[in-house]
Length: 498
Image (tube, rainbow, N blue to C red; front, side, top):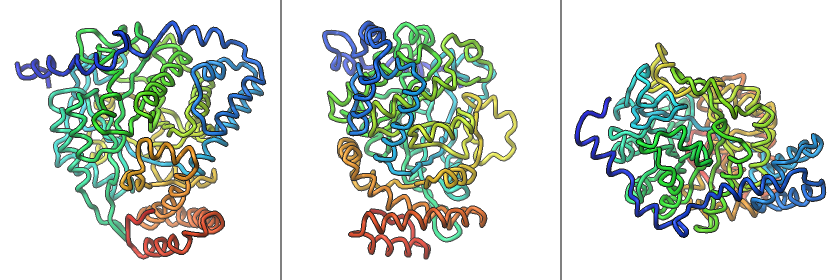
């Protein structure tokens, strides 16, 4: 899939629209002030306990923290204070999201890419990587496994930056996914929410994605540190343009996509700076559009096939610092979803749940076409990095039950208009959590009846009974209607929601 034609070269040359960068700049500068971030981190060293406690009180009141507040938390060294911060992070998570964990699956549709990122196995100069782009019929095979055999209701669909997977392909693939129905034991499996992880798009292209009904649009800046960004993204590539990537969420908001996902690839630069960059980005969106990130992700660099940079990291993030990152992010943006993926191993993922994580992937495969391909030959040469946790969705659900969490497959809020500023206001006030508790039970009931083994069903019934009792006590005004929906779902009806 080399870029051989003049048409492909023209595609690359026309990708970046400078006017869609300049319109957002302030006096020709972007909103990432490297000197300010470094100064705030330096000035906040050795924060006193009273200052930290005042900051934690803000988080408990579901208030977004300032950059100065975040710098203080990042500089805490007292182990007892960190323990208190972790306990507070979990309290905040349960206050906003209750005891739900949302699950999804990543679906990589192609590994062709015009970029040459030094940490990525998909980079164009990695000739050991076996290139493949799924056809619409191949996408259908993958989705039928995901929704009909495993039980997923939401996907994050991942595209490389390449003319073969441009906006027309994106729109057609999303339409294909939404159109698939697969018979299950008692009902019908389907994907109800398609989130998109893709390269930065223009406003015109983002409007097309919005029209086809995508959920969250994810673009990770990878690193907010300008010099590091230049070092790992060659300047003669599309991704080498820092500002085109930085302002993609502004363009998404302008295009009508009000659920956006931010992220950093931790390990490229100092983790404290990157956390400050993420919070700066979130605050910028809140200031300009009234709503910040719907989700924040924080993947760490993992080994990748034929990619030496991943094995020689100056800023490699330890497990302890990784848990600090999660803790601070939960406290800094208490109403925002936090995603941990199968890059991490099972033990780290379990520990992260107790720090305020709200979403995880499960039954994850990232080689192109690997959900329906049972041979699994040479998949290391078809995937972007090495996975740390390959457990099935059912295995994770059993672990969450043991931890006292219910797995939610709910996608109702997005179809009821509870997105963007609306859902953020509801999350801050605790109202959205009530809808989510009802819908979590209904969708978990669906999954249990359609996909769970008998052993898992027995465990699931206990947590379902506990959740129903809580609904009866805390939401008596809707309990009768809830039980009507619940019994209809038990009898095979699907996709009932509040």
